[in-house]
Image (cartoon, rainbow, N blue to C red; front, side):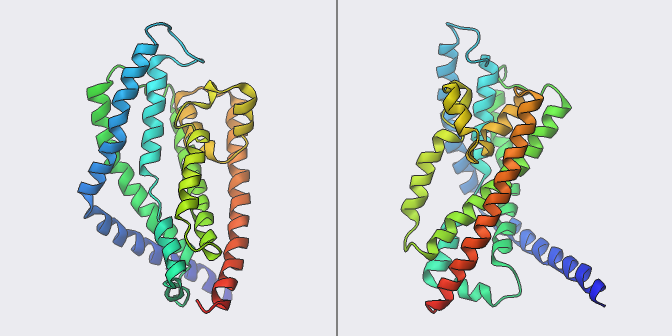
Length: 277
């Protein structure tokens, strides 16, 4: 009986979270106009980026190993990855602050897995919707400057890295949320993190544009693996050793962040319940 209970409970869990994701897909689809406006706000700056780099490349054929097409493709990929990584951390922090978390704790589901399912559902649907708008941008503004992966291996590695990036993004989101157990308002903390990480994720310039010692140091942090690493794999710019190291660093950070989240969440829950939350 004990052996049968394990798989049965696992199947029930998959069905439960699958149902939650289905409900979230339906709810998220009602905000199509908001998504379209949000994506357009992300795509609009890409027009200026294309104009700027066209002007720069009139004087040179290559910059830090990038052609004009490769660099424009890089910025389109980074913008796309940044656009569909929707986060619920403000809502989760509010649950802790106003006591709503208590209602989740008495339910037969994991709070973190619950929000993981919601976030994944929204991101997966949003990624498909955004793909259409980004596709229109490429066809209209830069049809000659967007590159496709050179090989199927590059495409497969890119998709694998995007999956790993989502895991890291979720873990970082949950750790940021856990700070709400100790900090009354984590909004400032979130904005500070956004400002500081904008540089190291590679959204401003590729890490290859930085001094070697600085880019080498940043490459050991988790944030470059959210956008820079997947984009580099898509473009096939990394040697096999760099690919192996990148996925290794990504896996190590996933393990470390997962462990940190487990510790912080348990201590935070003890603090929350002790204070009457």
